[in-house]
Image 1 (tube, rainbow, N blue to C red):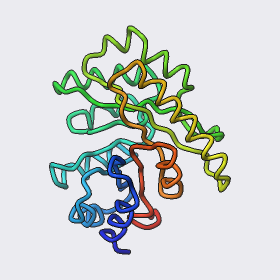
Image 2 (spheres, rainbow, N blue to C red):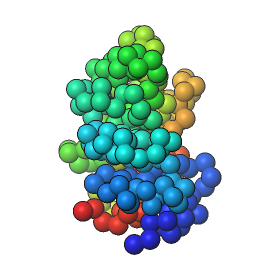
Image 3 (tube, one colour):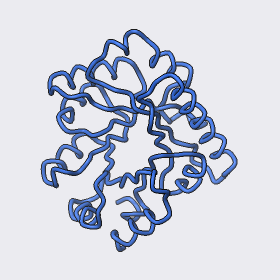
Length: 217
């Protein structure tokens, strides 16, 4: 498994405006270091504790993305350094991120997670509810958090037409939000198995793990 070669192959297949997030959850420091030496700077973790441990041991210019489901009581541990929080699916969580951003005197960028998949196990907001949050006075009052885009996960299925339908729904939500909020610029969709289709559908950020690091341990 040549991590550097894998990154180069994926980067070569992506349009220049699409950001590659290397999903490093469960992967050892050595594997992340190999990716770093290959030029990768954006890494995604789904557990706060694991991300904090890795951040302390690795290079200071790494941009850490929290891509997993996030509990409010965990925000404080990563608020000083997290680059982007992908999975925000409720207003109380946004308020907590704002509170911790204020403590560290920084604005924390977030994506609203939209539920596009059929599976009940997937988290996310209904697009209408996400719109309500974006347009609410409560969100307008939060000065240390900024919603910069949307994120979604498609159904785990081999039916490409189903996946495309879900990606198209997320893209149309993204397009709508862009019409009234200048901060909306990131459409995070697509993982190892479906990122080429996600890019076709307009993704600006893909989250790739196994295609870079091999299957999960």
